[in-house]
Length: 370
Image 1: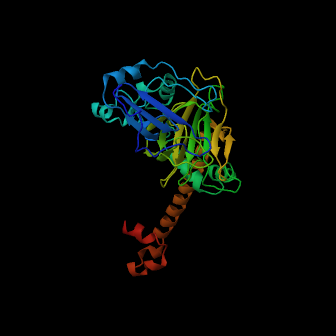
Image 2: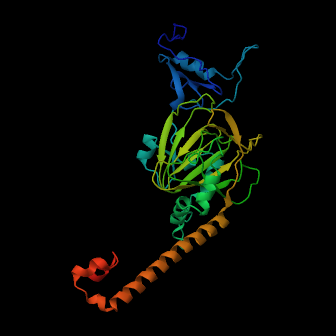
Image 3: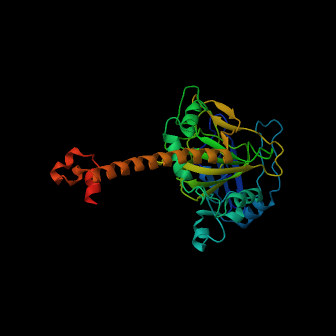
């Protein structure tokens, strides 16, 4: 062997982490002749230690010859899974289709080609990725405005429903730590909850840190923007995010059973964000875990069974009814205003000199000037 030092790195100061839920990964990379260790999800962003061998043919041959992993009989290490490929790259969070990708996109590694997603994630993407899959439609072009109005108006459905969910993830009311789940279709048992969910995030609202039950997922932004913080693993002891990314209108991101599983969503914008989330288990998933695990306000790990605040068809109809009432009220106000204008214009007072206009309604001057 070329390395005569016993593979000891005197500069390494990293070690085990004393946190609940922590796990580790170890990557053997024969092509690049290096060993990498990390915490939580197996990706370069979570690596804490790298050992680079001195380039040597015998080292490369040795690493290529490794075929299995064996544990000592009394080992306390519990293996989770064996991944086929070494950890070599930073995982892109944004998804683009073949028609959108450029050579620069591939070279810079900023975007995940849709073709590189798992077969399940590609299926989910195709279900929600079309140009006609939009929030505002010709028959209801003000859907997003209606949702925003419903959120900020006491007595309307979104406002009252969000208020009722203020203790969804905490014992004490916290209206900011919740969101609305509008479901499309039924639960067919192949995902944690109903597979297609439109989620509504008021400005300033956020989710608890949570995972996704080991499912694949694709998320598309239908309106507004959302900030996503990614965590290496879920822990009641608290863990810092290893990445924070902002997603805007029409951006798409993804989740796999081993990557991007633990995150927190937060609307840092000034208007509501609406996303479409879709989930599905891999064909080899035999667990079918029906919950999302999350960290509550006390720092404890809890289970959340994905629910539905309303079916999408009923919700859209309700928002249309609320918005029609808003427009009817505005139309009535306009009609009343025009009646007053007509009355004033037909009265002797309409011939008053401009200096007398102070006694008329505030908008009269603007109307007279026009």
